[in-house]
Length: 474
View 1 (cartoon, rainbow, N blue to C red):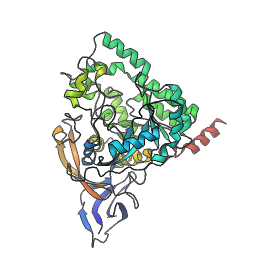
View 2: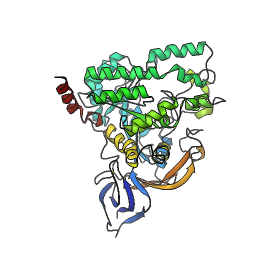
View 3: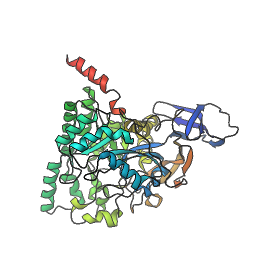
């Protein structure tokens, strides 16, 4: 017996139509009008939207002082069926062994959504760089490098970033970069703290827009010199986004994403009284409203390709985690929970307010993230042969985001009090019902690794763009 989702208004990144979906086992096997329901379980989706399970290509479990996969139910109840997690590399351990060990020790039997893994260079050396080409053998097609965090294990110099870019294209691995100028940030942070400016509101002053814009431009120049694709994560401001847009328009395979909080919050949140601003400390920091407005434009016009949550629920939450920086903003653990609310914020404040279309919503929250991760069309699409990761969405629901409904494991909610229009009435992961009206009803630990394929989205037009660029310069 299969499952038919009947009469739903199906939304993909390209169109919208009313049809039935037949699921057998874990896959979509048919899409059409008036499919025969005999012998099948039927879910009537009349009056509802049906779209692919969300793909959140950028979040953190078990790393950077964050909670682990025991809290990953939150993704499913928010309509996200696949998460993209970053694996830390202990010193002296190869990238590929780091992936194997992490999966065994922290993920297997614990992850509730499906997951795709990305590497992180934390032990920059010749052996690590050489191992980048082996990442696809363990189902990983992306590797992240941090230009920020001077003095920390994950800080990399330009030397190692350039070498990683050169090596990565040999195997079709996408280099992702956290772009902030570590030296300038280090100087500004020490100066502000020495002046007694230790409140959370000074966090944004320690990491101004130009530190991100400069590092983004520098990473782009290195990608150009290495003749390699580049993906810039969590872009927050107009200058950085324009640098990515302009490089792409020049014929280079340069791409970027932004995050929910850079579309929903601004730097005024950092100045909330009673240390409440610490809840909103994340890297890069929240920006002025003018940059927030530009992020919506960048997403809508395709200058940035995806919206992730950068979910990082700090161990200890606000009371026992964030308050470690009570007298020094530089000691506030950066990161905020957000995987559960990502789709709701994008729908309520994007689709419902006319900033993006329903097709763009699916594109930046489901389809493009799957492509970027190298897991499309298995994920991020409603098509015959794709995994039956499906959200039946009730657009008529009205509610308010609250910590009482959160499964993030934190003691606060980043979007507390925000309006919520619409709800994931039913969420299916590989054909199984896992969440219903904000409640987790699946099996804990049922998630599987999605094996990423090399030469993903950032490589799709790499050769063609290079040929066009060379022809233009002749």
